[in-house]
Image (tube, rainbow, N blue to C red; front, side):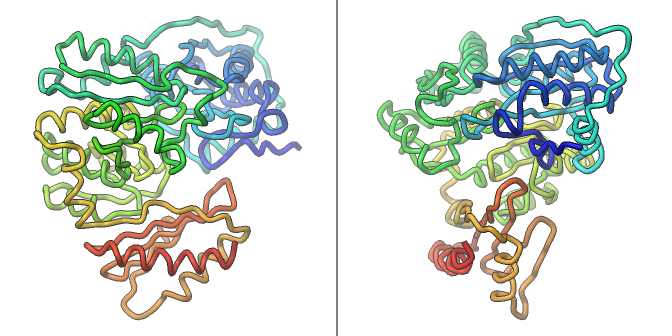
Length: 456
């Protein structure tokens, strides 16, 4: 039996041709329909050059299995989440490679209510069926319709803020020539129509499959100066940049300074608890002290979940959490099907800047000083497990708290680290934070970096 290496931990991503092509897309569509006994599905795609042909093949696989399919065209991943819930569909699929290299593509699959598939059972079973490609086709094919649901999606995301609360702001937005631009334009149009006094400066705004300004991945340090310089050039109050399918957004303050997603989690948790006292907030384990301090101070309950959208969403449902955030800039909202959105966060931050009278830089300044962090560093290592074990053995001593809940976390009281292996690449990801001591973060970063680089 063939092996489909495009199946990752909880989504599909692969190099075009050998790992992902139209034949494989067809089999994935038929396999999903078979496993889940689908009757209805909603499908969309990002702006990559191969996304439409992969979408067509996936749809054909579903149609041949008798599934009635609604195609909502070019859209972001969160528009699929919304469409599944809005149309009460059995499932949704977004064809996207997000921030992966230009010779890649992929798929994100969800079930009813935009619920993620369980990685070990549902997702694994779909993989096995697709690999076997032995389908029992029904006599009657499904039907295909095309719909534009963007107006309904825009109404949903704008329900998270009150336009009348907005102060005069100038916001620079960088869509990275990904899929965000058209959706943003509809949101901005409605926001301005509601009277919000906001001026938007657009850059790299039109979808372009050639990505003339580079793959849209604002988390990469090399990609950040382009947005930062534009923020300064236009004297914007802050800047926003999205990845390719805009399920993540990234922030720059008025000076062009990049705001680590860790501190945005804290701000959004603070906002969520202001209107939902005592609520649960979900966070990932990579850096935790700032989030826990904010949530507990405000009377909420901070709950840690394993990194990854499938795990965060499951924890949110289990704990009826109002908000969940990952330092990688995934932000999840109970009132958005417990799903992540790249549009809701910038709207909430704009409202917070407006109502607080503070700049974005001022809103995070004290938090950065109280809990300085390294940001995430990635190391290419052929044997990640061995390298992580060396770090643990070297640093382990009396009084150190160790957790293996998600990779290796070591808490030394005044500083802590988290080391995780990538599920798809020979990478080790390192995060370090401290209690008020930036110099200590740099010192420990150099120490652990030396250990890891000796294994690279």
